[in-house]
Image (cartoon, rainbow, N blue to C red; front, side, top):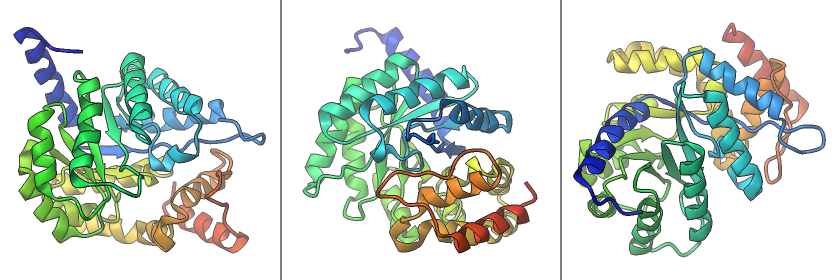
Length: 313
């Protein structure tokens, strides 16, 4: 699609302002619950989405990592996208995760647009041979395929520098935000400044555990898988950070630290498993995950259930 009128460009710019606001928030990554026969549990999925929306969550990312993106089939990814958009019914901004090979990423971005999403989040390329110029080319092709959508690169590669993002932004003005997930607050601060600072909305992509440190360096939003379990806990951290009350934010951090450290252990091996176990302890969905994830042993299940009870949900 090409934009050939100044009016259309103005409309896009206005839309991007509201989309920037949506990223400067909790960017919730919903889980994808499964049935006993390993299909998507659409009833539980809708109920979990409704729980997020009813508790005031206003930005949702279907097909994120906590949604087991890489374990879903192409049709399942589209089902998750459509179901999330339908359930939200205008109550939330939808940021659809896309990625894998370039044709698949473009096709899923086009589907997200046609289904009614407002943004796409581009997963870090998993190809073992990612050059800096090739990273730019990959994101440029996706962004140019959907110029009316906001685009958010998901950066996990510490080899990328802010100058690559700055170059990409010159080519694609619809790249408006960044989900930064390199676990290094100093690197994030340098990357953001080299990329152009407030030209982007910076989302702390390592959730509540890193939100306070990344916020101090310029982030104005953070992703969350924990929000599936305890929306009020995540929202209380957001309120504290927005108020500049780091003492209050760190009290929330201390509360959720054991939970988030379990998720982050062994290179995030149990990132999804811990969240689903917590939801199972509350009777909200089954604990089932797909390989290469795996359910937890009994002793860890009891530990997580105890942590969740301590949050007085």
